[in-house]
Length: 78
Image (cartoon, rainbow, N blue to C red; front, side):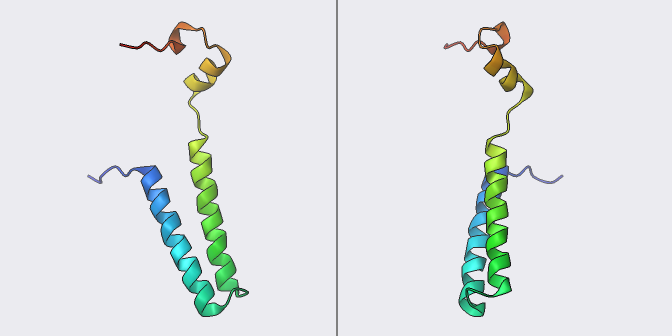
């Protein structure tokens, strides 16, 4: 059975690896090469996905945003 991965950590690792690769590609191929441009496009896509995942809300969160006084949305300190 596969282990459950921490998605946020996986995306952060992928971004780090993509940035490292992009820098290497640009150093080797030149900053105007297509390999360099594609590598930085990948970095941008990964960063956009990270941003998208952070902005996801559940249906309950949306409901509570619109109905903060609903009993389902109460938060208790214990």
